[in-house]
Length: 224
Image (cartoon, rainbow, N blue to C red):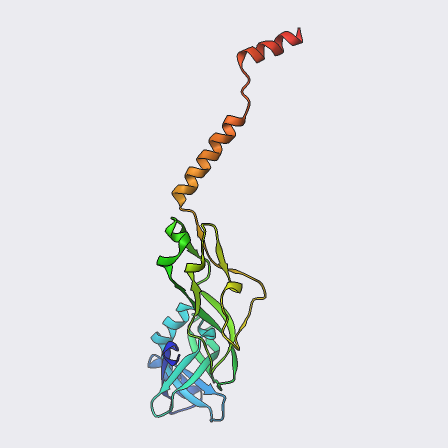
């Protein structure tokens, strides 16, 4: 499981205070602090470009990282705050919190879809639509699942779907959403849908009574 946790590389910051922080920013680094656990706070610097790209990727604050700092043991951390420039909206400082193995955290867990080739509904010509490819769970830092698994071989018919209640949630984990939301479904191909819609239109048109000339004449004669 450790291999599934992304590394976050940083370097120890030798100075503290505003002067050291400004010097770090001039060198293209973002100053930060690592706190929590049974260890003293550790001032760090992270390359600006690396941090900026991770922030753009999204969900930085809900991602568990394996922090690597030269001269220190690796530690699992989660971001608790990112301070930004009020004008440019660029990161200027970040706070990282060390996690104990029994710490509860919210994380988005990836959903794996397996046995696609063995799915009866897909073999009948259906199209798989993924509604959610990740699910937010409350988990312990020492027991984070690599992924949730959806077995597509269980989807028998076109039009069937998989909801979160159909997926096995790892022991000790808990959903953050208290409803049975959809994960994926198998729908009819768009070409088949269009053909069905055209057939329905033709059927409806055939069922609509057409007023002929004789009916029209009868109605006119009735008025006389």
